[in-house]
Length: 38
Image 1: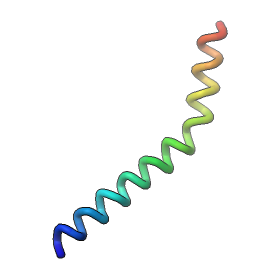
Image 2: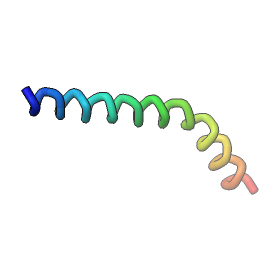
Image 3: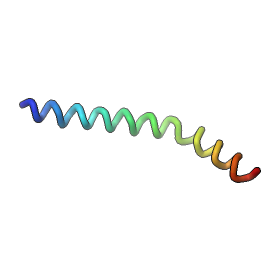
Image 4: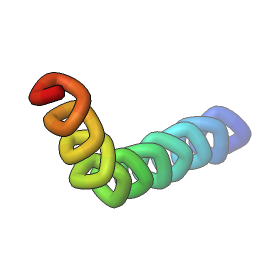
């Protein structure tokens, strides 16, 4: 049971990181494009 909790915790952490990366991806892409175009 404890291992099940650990797995779900890891999955929720990964999901949160994925959400953050998807949220910040457009900003990072725009910044990278601006830098590469200069």
